[in-house]
Image (cartoon, rainbow, N blue to C red; front, top):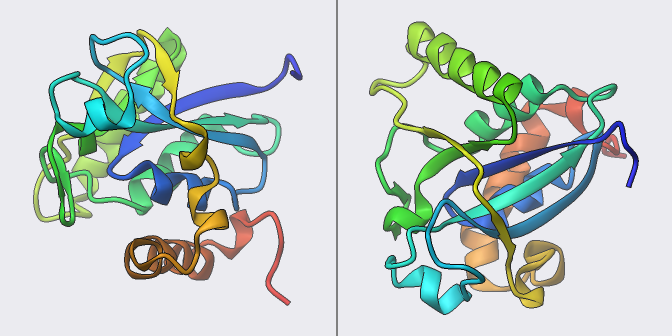
Length: 183
């Protein structure tokens, strides 16, 4: 791996949604779906879905900071989910769907906390941001069938109803951040 790359670990509801959007962002090298923030080592999807592991569904975004900054990654993150709902995103309910930023170092922590404060001060949402900002204490890669789920299952009903609209909204509102410009 390129030594200049950085990693962000983010939870914003279903990891399929975040992965699909971040796959499109210029400067993003790779995106992996997984689990973080809990106590159980090597959890399975079924275990995480019970809400008893403490883990959230996360995406781990590897990016080139010369092309896209960590702050820009966070701005995309906040644009594609509702950071004001505790332990839920839409119909997905439970701590595994919480909004969280799992920082890798003190600089990421500082930027995350500043970004949350700036966004709260701007009153973009009617309610305050409840996004957890916590140190990453382990990332567990999700099962293979979760990787690139949207890309491989675009006709699946959840993907059509939930993931596709988020991807389309991001593409429409953030053309300057796309890897490929629409033809």
